[in-house]
Length: 430
Ligand code: AMP
Image (tube, rainbow, N blue to C red; front, side, top):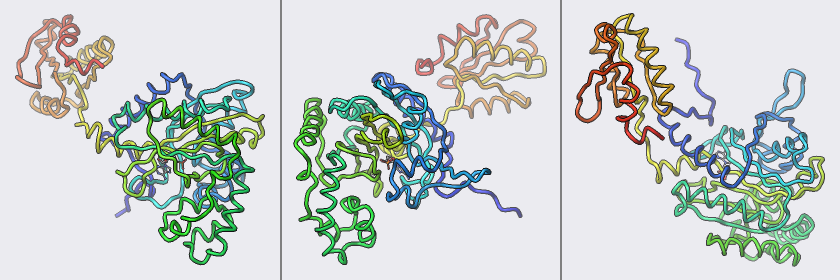
């Protein structure tokens, strides 16, 4: 027997029974971004490897061990995108969108990271993200933060999520802090967990968000980043917090929040939930004022976030929408005999033209009335539209209601559209 080929580990199929929730989320995203006047941008899912090395940072987990990187046929090193921001900056710059102007952009699509798969963590996952370029002041940070809060409200998830914010200041401030942290931790190195020992040499800030309890205990008396921020940086962060307060968004300042990508400065934030086990982060973002320049452009202030779609779908399943029953059609076209089949195709098309919200399913494969009715029932359609030779001769059609009491009417074919328009359930007219 030949062995069945399976999807790759950590890469999921989204089946018809699940896709309803994805579509609801996608609709909410479209409405949200449109109501904030953000424009969509779509970039390729593969880029030159150097783009991610230069932006995310060589010492980050993503670049050091999680990228899908390979040589193409021309021996060029290319990488499946592990996140969206670097590519948006690359595209913005390549097409002159960022120079001397404001841009409010959003994107959505698959991302790839070679992580250890578990519930809520995959190797192909999807992100929705926004990027706001050209404004350095705290009101821009507040705009994207309020926008993320608004998404939870729209989705009915607001009470299940909470916001953590922090300021990681500017590079120079961070350098001074890093040195202080290294000085503090070096004598304690042997008691740190293995990952943190390595990070002491490579990326000391990431030790702050270690999940190891002993490491966390050792950090209790460590120097605090906020003490290293200049007055100006503190004022920026204070204004962000003030705007959140004014908008009634509660948050916790988490002085250990640093985020896993190198390009951030000033404000960083994360929305978390306690309902997804270990994968508590559902949306992360912050300000990244140096990235555009780092990738060859002019200095351009920027702030944005990225949200994990799968994790939100899991939350929606648990709370807001539940599972939809799979209903594949509203109207099921039944035809008895070849003549009826021909006419039925045309009639179905006239229904689709006139009632674009209705899902019209044409029976294919012939068969007796009983078989076709069974299929109609299974499709969960509200109405079967039945055509046989008699109906064709008289230019009529039978409409049978399949839900509630199953009455049926005989109509002139010309009256079919208006009959169904009146009788289809209101919620199908979305
Ligand atoms: P990041 O780009 O790492 O800041 O991640 C932003 C968001 O993407 C996170 O808050 C998660 O919701 C989601 N995310 C990141 N990595 C994964 C993954 N491997 N599988 C599923 N979702 C992920």
